[in-house]
Length: 617
Image (cartoon, rainbow, N blue to C red):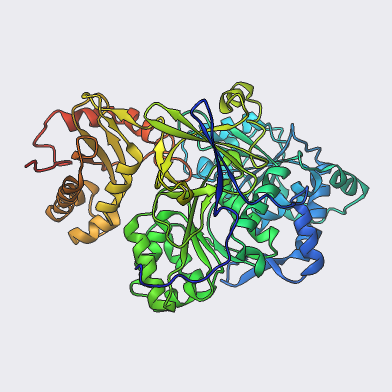
């Protein structure tokens, strides 16, 4: 698609870096563009837009009839005052914050704005910990860590989780309905609170170092940790975004977004973009799954976003739908300035599909923005905003962030320092100390390398996690991240994810989580066909055999040669730690929980119908 021009969009901020080579072997990078001024409180943006654009919708969500129900900036400011008073009346504080057990909703965002207005931290908790978990262990851990003074639940479906994890003396607020065994307050009561002098006084005390919220990590290797998010972190990062994606401030952005607010991408990055720039966020109740993508497609056929964010799986589903949906393609590309993904690597095949759809719809391709960020950094630290990006590029530092590159064994770790970096983990001093080096740089555990060592201004390339990589019995290092990305691309559309095996063994293998809907389509099976029968079907096995042969042809040595795979009939478990609430796979947990399957993969069981081996030449 190189011949297709890219749509022009105003970008900056992270286009060039000053590079300092240190005597200790580390490298420090800084943007050549200084960070501009930003407000001390996130709610200063709400106050501004309520004054300048009072009737503009800040957020909207479909109601039960399918109509969009908006809340304007002026209305949200009024709601924030009322809810803030109700939270103060309930005695909430950093020691007794507001916990929110809810999907993205108008009520959820209104409660968050009220809490921010009066300086009460809020804790958005993954709905999966309440609705999908059987033991509610992560929910109990989170609530035990923050000791909330009030819990809001989106609906009575949270009843079981509340009974299991919320102390009996902690008040519960429901949007609607009842709980079986405990009294509840109504969300509408909070909106009826009359703001008094205490609200103004509390708001005046809110400053840059006031805690805005606690966001919990996914707990990939240990129990989830509560990341302290201050107003300074959030406001500074929004200014960084405005400088890198300048088009955000040139016209009020319009977002159509499903990304959950219990994570930093949806809750900080995207909600913040709408608020800081006077934009409108349309809450998308869809999900990037075969079953959930229909609602997203419905919304995108109706509303043209000015910038579109998703995870790679979401873009994959949308790209596939646009193959046969011209209306979707026209609406999505009509005024969109850029796409951006996070959470995992985007397959280059999907990237190329998106470029092709842009060429067909508007005669241009959209720039696809990539970068690196995390919960601990509010989130964005580097961006690649050019028109020549490829999958895996993460670019250069944003204004105000210092990047340090430190050699760790055969990898180079990237570390961050800046006003968007957390002060620490809540009530976890030891974990906080371990998170920073002696210069105050946050240690990410992410590995990077130069796209072109001879031309560092081209930026950095993501190189996996430093802790994921391992050695074969031959002493050869296996770089997990790039190999996993190649497997997903080569196995498209039948690979949901791959867990790489081979630690202290002679060869590389993988446990494959298949996309069952795609496997069923290849096999011509119905939805009621048992999973083992689908995976044993000759057409499905042939697909994966061909994947192995393609990967073998691309291999450059034993570290990149995939010789065997095990097709997993059992999906990943959130309770066993295999699946995070972001729907990403925890490689380490899968290997631990399925050690017997890894052993079987290497024991040469020729009769095992779930195992496929490469035909070695």
